Image 1: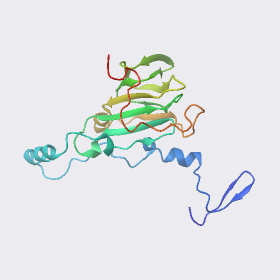
Image 2 (image 1 turned 90 degrees about the horizontal axis):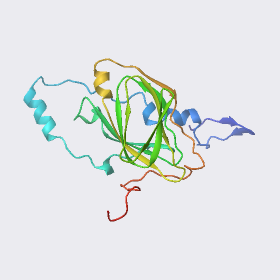
Image 3 (image 1 turned 135 degrees about the vertical axis):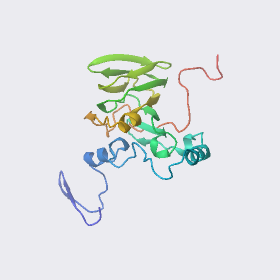
Image 4 (image 1 turned 30 degrees about the vertical axis):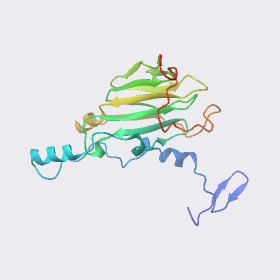
Length: 210
């Protein structure tokens, strides 16, 4: 932003002012990026053996350390498997981490999704109906459902692994997705200073097992 000035309450702010606006924060969310690879191109040699050789040469274990969290400060995503990786074409798998008291974006899409709750407690609002969940549950988002996710705890985070068939639906040109409310870019009193867990920490079972 060199060479620009911005005006806020109290007058002009110099060109070294580098705090992004809410609109800029929202535009920079991974979920809002317009240049993502949703369905990878089918191109190159028209040869089954060549494609199988390519797939067999690809890594089959995705390391968490190779998939950094994106977004925040309330909702964080770690995208383990996407079509852009060159392995899958029909599903997307990601880890969601919700800070204490967090809420997600509110949106709807054609494809289904399943949220396996790893830890924490929370609830969904699907088409205006509330559904509570806790660790071990599976929350199902059905086709064309307008939904939003909430962490019910004010002191502990919640975590879910998400599997969805969005790439397959997009491949079939079923493109509808609508954001009703953007993923929050501001902290809440409960989420202030929260950082997504880089390693697995289980809040629901005693240390050392039962």
